[in-house]
Image (cartoon, rainbow, N blue to C red):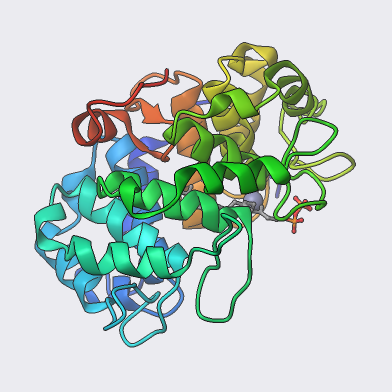
Length: 322
Ligand code: GRG
Ligand code: ZN
């Protein structure tokens, strides 16, 4: 039987969805399970905070789990005894910042790990295997800025590499010459905003490309000819927000698309209406709604995908957006 499309944000149900992600609902071990890992904790905690339910997670347990994922090289793995990767290292830092527990981190060791991933041309690799991607440029700059250690890398070179990934359409790809993709655009525009180098962006051209991502059903895709997906509500809108052009898309129809992707039985948000919900699309759905000013949600910082009150407190001297 076809489900009725929800027309309101199902906040209580979503909180239950997040807290019940594992069968062991009352135990903490579920956060440490392989399929969730550190990223999952970041997605869950950020969603809960934006919905004003951060305290539903046990702070001490989360901190202990984060610290248990750190390796001798200073980086964090996705779970206990997993190899270090920039992606998990940023999640660890974001979680600790959101929990106001940065003093529990070894900032020098994390900084050294991020620094060790820098290449001479300004690019970054994610881990010891050496893949280069503008995702890693973003992670390095976002992570170091949250630790107040941007001095540890050559920011001008990092900006130069991101500039080399800019395309004729105003968008950015993963490496020089790679096609524009909304996920990479979030990374590049976010990183440039963090280091105050937005002059690299051709704002009107890119804003137009981003606005063209909206389809007739209100949802956004990540590049031309692709399907709509709730997570692009974040990757696309965050960049539009940083460029002060969020009004270039139809807000109401995007809100309806995101609300229509909620699961009215289990809670949670899926990639599109009718699909199975997951915590990744939960976060990017709720963060997208927050950027659109949906009532009852905290404001979100488009550069970090973290609540704005957190980054305002952590990064007081930088230009704040939104
Ligand atoms: C702090 C929010 C935050 C992120 C950390 C890891 C990272 C930095 C950013 C990832 C950016 C990115 C590349 C997002 C895109 C994810 C995605 C939906 C990829 C799917 O790409 P395709 O090509 O799908 O498989 P399409 O939609 O093009 O068919
Ligand atoms: Zn998605």
